[in-house]
Amino acid sequence: MFPVDDFDFHTHSRASDGVLPPAAVVTWAVERGIRHLALTDHDTLDGVAEAQEAAIAAGIGFVAGVEISAEWQDRGKQEEENAKAVHIVGLGVDTATTTVLQEGLRVLRGGRIERARRMDEAFSALGIPGTFAGAMRYAAIPELISRAHFARYLVELGLFKEPGRVFEHYLTPGKPGYVRHRWVDLAEAVAWIRAAGGVAVVAHPGRYKLTSGAMQRFLEDFRDLGGEAIEVVSGSHTPEHVSRFAHVARQFGFYASRGSDFHDPAAFHASKLMPLPEDLVSIRERLA
Ligand code: AMP
Ligand code: MN
Ligand code: MN
Ligand code: MN
Image (cartoon, rainbow, N blue to C red; front, side, top):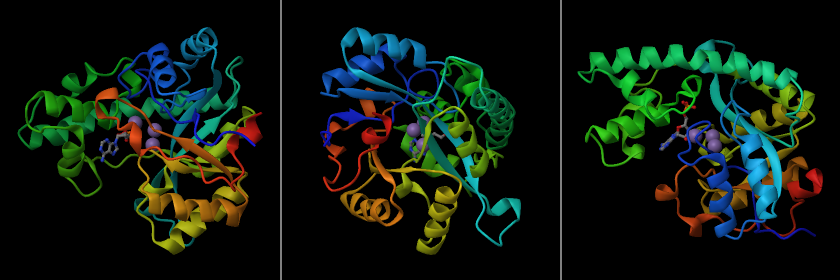
C-alpha cells in the first residue's frame, strides 16, 4: 500500500548525539530519496520544530519523534542490576503543548550530566583526565551529554581511530569507562508516548543482548503496555535481523517501522538500509 523504501523514521540531529543541525538532517534525507522523515533525538523534542519547517520547505512528509532511553526488568528479576537498557521510539507525538511526555523527558535528561561526571571520574582514574569538558564541547545541549560525545573526544585525543572502538574498549557494560545509569522504566516510556498521542516503537531490537526467551518476554511486556510497532529494518540490522523481526511483527501484530538511526554522514553507509518486507503492515498506515 505504501512504498516500502522511501521513509526513514529514526534519525538524530545535534539536538542529541547527531552531528548535523535538524534542517541539515532533512537535506541529507532528501538527497537519499527519503520522502517521509521522522526526527527522533534522544530524550528531547528540541530539534523537531526546525526539522519540521525544513521538511515543509523541502516538500517531504514529516513525523515528530523522540527516542526514549528506557530500561526493562525481566519477570522475577527485580534486582536493579538486571535491568536492560532499551530504546523506545515515539512517533507522531504532540509537541505543541507541555505534555506528560515533555515533563518526563525533562526529568530523564536531568540525570545525564551527573552520569557524565561519574564517567569523567572513571576516565581520570584510568589516566585520561578532562573528558567531561572534552565531551561537553561536542554536546550542543549540555543536558543531552551522551556516551557518543565521550567517544568523539577520545577519538579527537588520538586514542582511537573511530568512536565504535571507544565503545568496545571503554563504554559498554563491563568496560572501565561504563557507568551504570537509571533510565526510565519501559512502562513509563510507553505511557508518556501514548499520553502525547504517539505510537511507541521498539528501536533496533537486534542490538539488545537478550536471550530469545527474554526477548519474547520483553516484546510481550511492550505489547501489553500498549506498544504498537517495531523497527524491522534498522541501520544496525543484518538481513538475518530483518527476517527475525519481520517474524516478530507478524506474530505480535506490530506495525513495522524502518529507520537508519542516522547520526553522522561520515559514518553512514546508505546501502545498508533495506526495504521493508512487503507483506508487513507499515507504520505509515498507523500514522496516515
Ligand atoms: P547514551 O544515550 O549516552 O547511553 O549513548 C548511547 C548512544 O551511543 C547511542 O544512541 C549511539 O548513538 C551510540 N552508540 C552506542 N553503542 C555504540 C557503538 N557500539 N558504536 C558507536 N556508537 C554507539
Ligand atoms: Mn545516539
Ligand atoms: Mn538507540
Ligand atoms: Mn537512535
